[in-house]
Image (tube, rainbow, N blue to C red):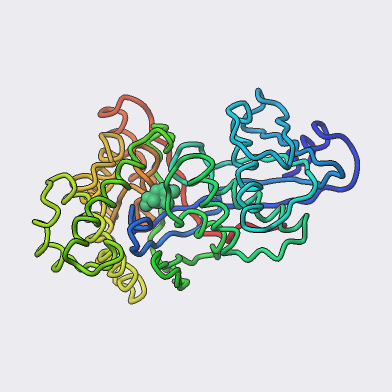
Amino acid sequence: MVELAKTFIEKFGPGAEPKTYFSPGRINLIGEHTDYNGGHVFPAAITLGTSGVARPREDTLVRVYSLNFPDLDVIEFDVNETANRPELNWANYVLGMLVSLRKQGFQTPNGFELAIEGNIPNGSGLSSSASLEMLVGVVVRDFYNLSLSTLEMVLAGKATENNFIGVNSGIMDQFAIAFGQVDQGIFLDTNTLEYSMVPVVLTDYRIVIMNTKKRRELADSKYNERRSECEEALRRLQTQLDIQALGDLSTEVFEQHTDLIGDDTLIKRARHAVTENERTILAKEALTSGKLETFGQLLNASHASLKEDYEVTGIELDTLAETAQQQEGVIGARMTGAGFGGCGIAIVETDKVAAFKQAVYDNYLTVVGYEPEFYEATIGSGARGL
Ligand code: GLA
């Protein structure tokens, strides 16, 4: 933060004292690709995230700088602009939030200066973009004294992705990042938006994040295609079933009606959404009652379903998760986030973490040809002023 505050003055000059903010990234324990299918998710905010130093301006200019993209230098736009511009690069997320908030009726009359620095690797599936969106949310709520609820801020972030960036994502990432609390997972029903905070008590185990280092941008991944496939499967099921979302179905009822879908690929996509929702509910129960082994097995089953039925893993994530699952002291491992590259998580016995990392590293290097990266995940609190 000291470095960032210095950079802020270098880039924007002296003046009124700026304020500091932090917005986390997230992992998802389980409940993948269920949030746009009316199912459950079980994410948590982490202590990696985006730091920001900001100060309001008297005029309508917004000037932003990222220590992660120094070559782009200060990016500037007018607070009243309405459209995504490629030249704005990462600042499109900042503009997108302002546009989305205005559409929700929250006025943003004047501009601001913002310097940021993130330690979530971009494109790693730990939601660096939602982290930035929620950072902007807390900054502008503060600067314009907006009576913006946390849920409204979350919805503005989702609208930014859906309408401004072009990713048809669900609500999980922004929800986790805005509502996160230390050592708590968020068990969220994405259909009703009811949620409960669940203590993540792992006793002698740690959550290790494994980064494939394979970058992907969701805008050009098959994310939107998967979403459309699920919508089509739902439409076909609705010809005879009275359901609003795939999340309304039990696996049993689903399996009795697959003939309504009549297409193997669509059946597999929908099967993942249905079974993953059930696994998520069971995993939350297992964790709550201290049945860590059951919890771990559900994580492994989630990965298998994302690999076989949803087909969003690929050699990199499969190598990490499956190698991890075979190591001593590991109770479960899976990809986390959208897939197509990005990160996985493993629940590893504390004493075995070093040996675990070495073994997974070695095998990944042999199979994939480049190095993975590991971070120990600590569950932290949501986006906030410091
Ligand atoms: C991305 C999206 C989320 C969710 C996950 C998959 O992170 O932003 O809304 O769909 O993928 O579970």
